[in-house]
Image (cartoon, rainbow, N blue to C red; front, side, top):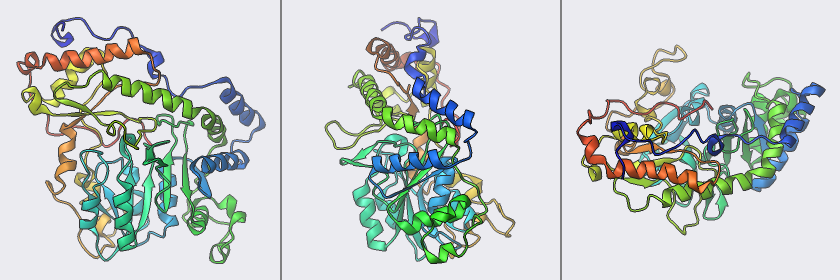
Length: 439
């Protein structure tokens, strides 16, 4: 192994390698469809969006799909669809992006945070059961960074306590859990489709469900122009105005892009999967690091590998801080940062902030109990920022280039003792409240 680039050696990665990371992949058909919408002045219609919804629903094998202007809106519609209201408790993993749960606050609900399983980084089914109270109404499942949550155990808990299940699939487009697509297990699911996601249409979101009432409630909430689709009497009586006061229509230049993405996503996803697994296979056996991916020969997949992560064990590298480890990776040309989403249960908005001026913290303003978590109450979630790191998200399978990145990682791991001499340790806070782009 050569001298570390951080200490004056030559970088492992040569050039910028933009072809490995360019995303989304735009083709001529996509450009034509977008220009057609633009030239016809059809940006604010619904015809193209409805066709996109139909094709997305067919892909997932569900009855209803509702396009929205972003993934947060899709989640908001989902929560209203299942009837979340004042005093209702919703259990959510602490390690996730804020949009997985924050729309609950605007509906008067209460968010109860559960710990995550370190293997998957998804919600821990055992901790869900510990957090259930008399006012618990739903569980939010996030298939974090493409890794499918343990849906068998989660659905058993939901059935036992008669809870609704909302799947946030914003990281898991095309991910399989035991051969079945994530987003098809719960009562309703929601996806972000913005340009940074693995299924990217520019900006947008989509909600899926097999439940007609959930679907139509979501329409009443933020899609007033589509109230002619309502069939349920109590909803039809209020037709004409958005019940939530929100306008969540998907932009048709985005839905036009989506129609093309559906055609080509499977092939793109397969290439990403091949590239990412090749990268991690090159690093097998190294101490201190492991991939965040399902076991080999399992019936679980990573979909488009949104925001791929590695797991870090400082003890196996002499106590080297993850901060110094990632600094050395970046010097080699391997773009990497420590941590992921910081634990949401520690953010003031869920502990002390009165968003709506109700005289008490918003998250417990309508609650029958104080559900706020204290520091060190969710030990796995609180340990994760120092135990995971980002790795390059390869969009193309170009072995000779991927091998350079793997060499850069290997070089750092095998020279960790040199880094220990310059290690100043980790800062108090690692990671951020967002992963990359906004949802």
